[in-house]
Image (cartoon, rainbow, N blue to C red):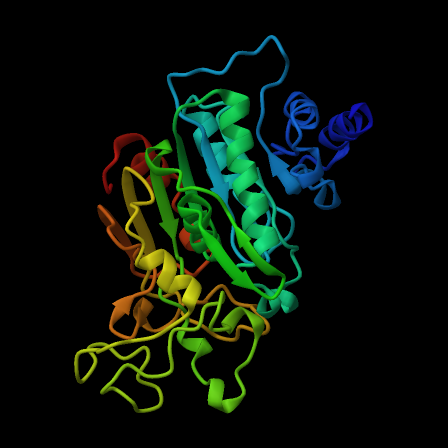
Length: 340
């Protein structure tokens, strides 16, 4: 829509200059989305201003440079596509680094999901509306650029969202049941997961004690399982090593589905995390320490995507620093297909 495109241009011009402004999505991309049936998904997210989204060619005269595959970014819970506030720092640092290495905003894409209210973080899970919308964003970027394959960089809850977007299939959630689509298969060249909770969060143990936050639910949340037989004692979830090997662990149906899928989510899979990413309080999220206890969940590093080709482990970054301070490593992994 012309009105929407005009607003995008206005926001890009008037916002403060202390933070580099790479959003929202370009007027050219926004207009293309409207013409091709994607307008209803609100990928621009103007409610978050310039932080709501990024990506797109500057005009009809700019052609997509096929020497580089598009990179699509998935942020985490209570974050945004670009820097919105002190906690919701988005992908601004990484975007700036990629631009300095010769990429353009025609190669880099992101949209926000949810909002930046950290007190509402415990209310969010892998619901149908969010996953389906993000799948449509990936499809839109591929259609718009004409790219045969894409790269994905994801952080925190964005890791598990991105994996489901890639794998497709069904979700059962409070907002209904839905089919996300067929697996994207070889269309994803690289997925990089940063500080994800692929096997859940130990902070979500305790259903019998009343830990019933939606984000911890056992259908499409981050529930890690209550016990891992024969390890039954309270507090054992994050213990490493466990006294005994785990047998028959049951955890979130959503996570079990993506972890046990027969489809590889990308041609190349890489994972990153920090040993100091410690959970303080899911309800407040005032510190950037969310995964906890050396990243272990019932004997496994929860941030390691199954079938990873390589892992980058940091010693003392917080949850958000693992995204903010690693732009050079992210770039290396995407371009060199190796761990720096």
